[in-house]
Image 1: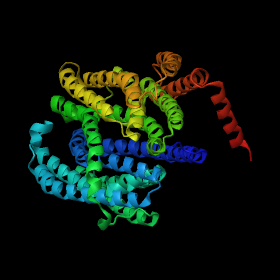
Image 2: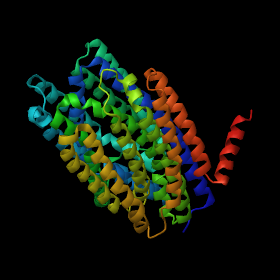
Image 3: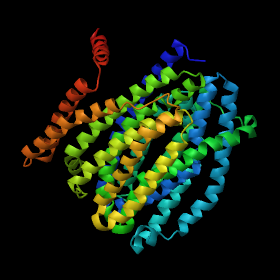
Image 4: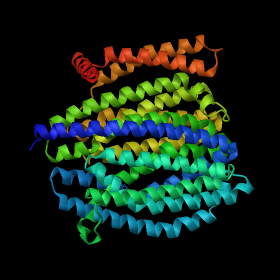
Length: 513
């Protein structure tokens, strides 16, 4: 069985809608994120800001309690949608909600008391007068994350139905509300850290409840009597792979800040976390593009439509890598200037940190495009092992390098693990996991990386020329030059003549009255 042309068009239409809504989400999220970092850096002392980042890095471990169920739910809904079985979708969602509720109830009884008694001084290298504050922040963070947990079924269900735009709009509203709450807390309580954590947490819970109520009107309803024991094992079986991947993601992306805090103290964390946040914004853009096709892969596989999967993967990979490489070039060339303007109270790290994180961004984008395909096809156990290797390598090498090279060593550890993982996924894992139905085009990757070379050269030349210029003027000049050269090189080297013609046709149609 293969998909009809109508199914193919609908998948691409929903994918484009997901990218458009997701792009708005990422753009506004980047604005909110940048404003939040600037607000915290302005309103808090460097010590309090470092404590905020380090403690919330620990709170992020609550993501492990998901056990990958949100991704298992996404895949199960996508597969049921491919069979046009609405009754099965309802049963799957209700079963997942019940499982989440049980996990959250047990975890609340364990995690909040643990947070109030945890050895924060030894764990985060904090001063004695910060121990109580660190425990309170951890208790609030754990409590809010666990209360929201059962409500995750609603955005995951919309994603499984390939309606990611709904989740994007919800997250935009939540991000804006949390930023306003944080600003109010900092102004009203005059830069106190605890209210700046508590008020946004309360707002996050409130918006999640409002979204759950709205979802009922869109036929996403939890009916506990519809839950079925037969779905528990498949959800956990599929989710277990994602759970291990989530552990790896914590090792790769959340633990570097903890490593730095443990070795160098909380005061050293901001010099790494701010540039890391900049490149994470770029990664979110590439993951948005690749991730827009995730539920469509599962639905197409249920119909046996491999030609569509191959075509969609080729398009998604090219678009995601083009975006990631461009942002990496901008970050490596002008990241220091952006940071000096964005968070002037925080010391700018060595410039090689920006270059290393740029390479890390490209490796992560490459891995995520292949991983999204494997996740959508529910054939991701090899992707899981790749992620786990990268996470363990990042943790082990980070603990080793941080002693001799500081935050630069931690960034280098992340890149080493990322390069090995990206090569393994693209050269070996994806072809094997798809029974050779999908293969990586090395020539396309080569053209893409080659298009970055002239832009990098221009960036170095402009930086050298404008060394004595004000930071804003230098940033603007470098970004403009690098962006134009990269766009031209990618247009000529990466896009085929037919692809360039399609782009021009869309531009012409957009200009018509």
